[in-house]
Image: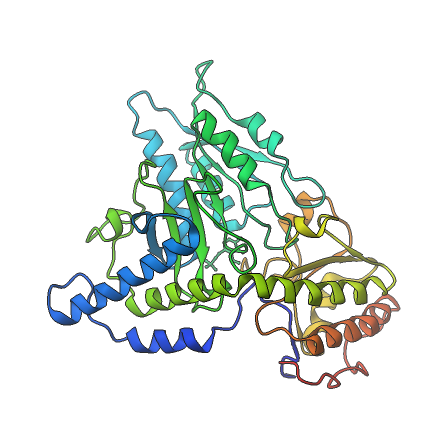
Length: 404
Ligand code: PLP
């Protein structure tokens, strides 16, 4: 296996920052934060410090912060928890939930599972071809409870799409929903590294965030749950975090999560500008290759600075993924965190895009050398595959310098 010369898969996971690893190491052996003795109190202070760090960067109160095992658990907690709380109502039939066809599986799967059980009536809004969701299409599905149909219990729309990088107009959606009293959940997992995420500014009621997308460790994240949002817990036990997420606090992971989010937000604007330059360099290089078409919104401020998604004509998606891997380029054909499958992206399908999908995503360690290596590899690989050649023995392999 060649080593990775170009890590262009930061949207799947980004390397942990050294300062965050130091915090993780300091607290990984901490006491039980629910215990009264001194080690327990120290651990509790570390958890509460992380809670304050998270609240300060996500525009919410520390009370709203629920630590989870990651974005997936945060999404599940909100989607299932709100639907089940709505069912508690004396007149309740199934709750009504609105979401979109381009959500991550962490939202779509619990929503579909609830619908299959008869717990919710589900409306799934189709995206525009650029991966964004039209706010008016979402609002058109919202029900006010008239006509004997259940009132909408939750709208769940992602802040930015993990594959195409398309950014939704969450402030406008949040304001419209707040006016009619319908709760909004935003999967903000892909946003935090480069966008200003704020429960308050977005008029949202819940957010999902994950540490390993912003230089933190895998296995920890946050569900922000605004006080007053009715939510049933999905696990029961010792009653930690307002009874919404029982279980011994993972002090090391939580402390590292707080540190990662604080650092990511402190460096966000500088990183965004750096990634904008790098991603435009990457996109320009790819545009020069015949039959490679950039996906997503035209306007730069409607797409994440970290993402470049393209559709490639006339090549097999799996061969493309194999060829990139063989040349030391880590990228994704769809959503790597969903299955590792080389094709079959529900996002690409929902956006009605044709060709072989390729997502390249940049992060805090990305370099020009990595971008240039990827462009050189694709410049050779794409015509070669189109001509029926195999994926090995590319001339450009090993030429990158300074990449990782
Ligand atoms: N939501 C989005 C938009 C994602 O991109 C991901 C992971 O890629 C998740 C949720 C799941 O997060 P986690 O890996 O922390 O469970």
